[in-house]
Length: 213
Image (cartoon, rainbow, N blue to C red):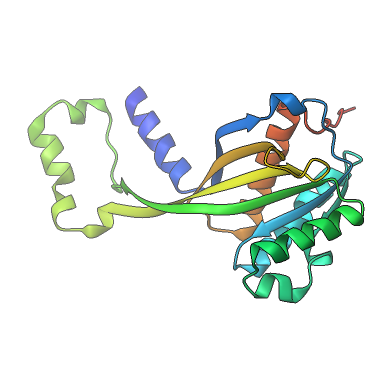
């Protein structure tokens, strides 16, 4: 019965949008870096997702007394609608520094993997799994019903924090990789992802935690 419950739990998790931290790295030489004014940038062609992401993350940062600004409010429309040269990007970074920004937190999709999970609509207790005859009888429909296999996507997303005060080859302060499993709702997915970013930044002591009363 225990193995059956585990299987059911896995399938339920796969049917829900969830964000998983894969790994996180922080520059130990910059342990005293405390951002004061962060530009939040979401790189995606889904403008709705970008707007929601930048809005929710800036809100979370502001609640920790960090001045955070959405890229929508800073970048010109032409900057994101047209592919920029490296020289143009460097000029934009210089402009940001002149306007008091000391950090950029940027998020981008690195890749998408498609997975397949076995999903039957009939589940039995352990004793049904102990005999080949019954097992085969119950699950032979997998040969005839393609619906027994369900496909879902896993999005690998990377979030990075750069120091604009020390904008050289070592300006990367923190980077983390996350997997977003089978996203269904933009609002729910973004909310989970933003929470995951905040938890990681707090754990790495890059931003302060909110003390709950």
